[in-house]
Amino acid sequence: MNRQAQAVIMFLVGAAVLHAGFTDLYLRYVKAGLRPLLLAAGVVLILAALATVWYDRRASKGEGRPGEDGGEGTGEGIEGGDGHGHAHREPRVSWLLVLPLFALILVAPPALGSYSALHTGTALQAPLAYPRLPATDPLPLSLVDYAGRAAYGHGRTLEHRRIEVTGFVALGHDGTPYLVRMALNCCAADAQPVKIGLTGHIPPVLEPDAWLRVTGTYSGKRAKDPVNDGVIPFLDVTEAEPVPTPHDPYDESWNN
Image (tube, rainbow, N blue to C red):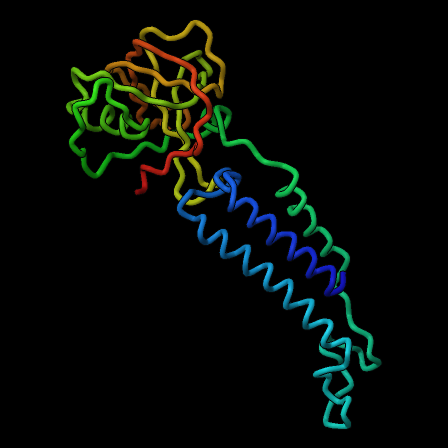
């Protein structure tokens, strides 16, 4: 792999990163707040690729080569010669860098779903505070907010309220239906599930990974997550309807 090939790959990686950043594709990899840094990284990669091409062309014309003007040069070129004007190339294994490039361009990974949720323990944590809720009926809450109030606030702020929660379906090994959102700190690699169990008027047919908007009331029922013994609160469902996958499938509210 010579410098021109390195520059081309660097340029393509930068262009792919910019494409992901200017579309919703980046939400499959990182949280929404990192979009400016992702775009900046793409610009830097493209500028570095262009600078590499310029530097290599300048060197090939003999500009800046030490020793060519009869000075104190050692005879080695800018690219690291062997004393005979031959530039050393990078090892062939460097071409493996093309693989993640093709993966980024050709493969758009789906958001993490029920398989990851059932093999990872709930990440639910006790909220620092319970902000006052509006008088909306039904009351739309994020799944993480409902789970925290139900599990650690003992439902005091939820009693006598109709709650509306959206998430994707996961079916436990014992058949228990869960509604889940994957919460993340930074990127999809650190995403962890927050789960609530469903009781009451549950649809007769539930497809794993299907997104549902459920309306229900607070239930005092709780269970232990079989993976890490974390608390899983329940919601008593009165209505449920399928909805499209949301624009951002991950939940970032738990670390805001």
